[in-house]
Image 1 (cartoon, rainbow, N blue to C red):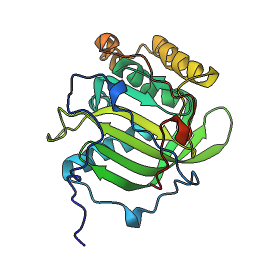
Image 2 (image 1 turned 90 degrees about the vertical axis):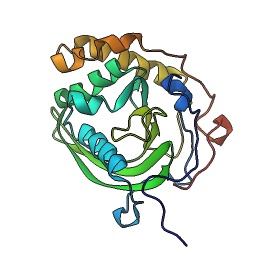
Image 3 (image 1 turned 30 degrees about the vertical axis):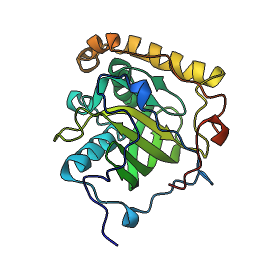
Image 4 (image 1 turned 45 degrees about the vertical axis):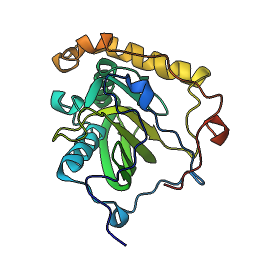
Length: 229
């Protein structure tokens, strides 16, 4: 059996049209157990350009945001996790640069690349978050999905259209009170961020958007098939 290609398999998941908004690039899945503990020895190899993208994303998780690292996202990107739904790069910048206000430290304890397709990279990720006010560290294992921008896939600076972070077996239904809070949080946090780094992305507020897609459920009946990633 041949080794997987570091530049990604030929499999595609999304439209090959970079002008489409990030909302069109959501990957959906449920997991049999929700255990995303990484095993780095089993991580798929990545090309230098893909590895550089992954390292920039990990650095953002570790509270090391820079303007250049936030440029890894397209202006019309979407970020979706347990607590946040941000639908442009300006809001995304607000989130990354706000993390040091909430946490004393953030440490990436390992990752395992489980999908390396032409337009999708997915990795298991273990992150330790230490809160500022409460002397407590929370360790979270999650599946991170990076849907790649068709316009930069073959470049040395690959960008992300949709970034999803799942810490449970189920996907997000994108509706209900939880979804409303996630969007409210992203819409409002950025309003209180006056750093020049965040303001550098202010023009992205007008990036192309579509309404958030809803699914009724985060289970397989909500267009989220079971995948043992």
